[in-house]
Image (tube, rainbow, N blue to C red; front, side, top):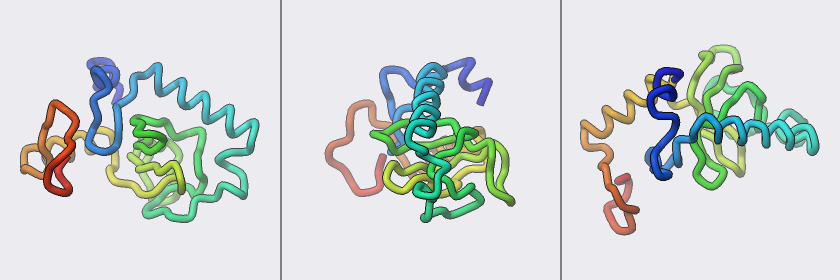
Length: 143
């Protein structure tokens, strides 16, 4: 992850990584993480009993938000986080899908590098297509 951000530092012009949203810059990651910390402090958002995540698939701590998760993408509150405090059986640095309505959903990559490799493999295998403009009409499941 460090090497990727040293080279690219997010996406250019708000480009999306599939439906996950824009890959944030380091500055955006720190700003969003700071907002989460503020919300957690002011409203007990995240670690409180009222914000227990229920729809988890994989080794993710059952909290809506955890200070050891960093947001990597944003798509109107949904996105991807890197998890540095996984539940038992998880891997430090695992990539977690986050839904703004239910919290963390699932682990879909063991690392940032694996996630990027999976995306590249999907492009090479025709699972995804690169489309320079917003895709407004097309077959279902094509990004």
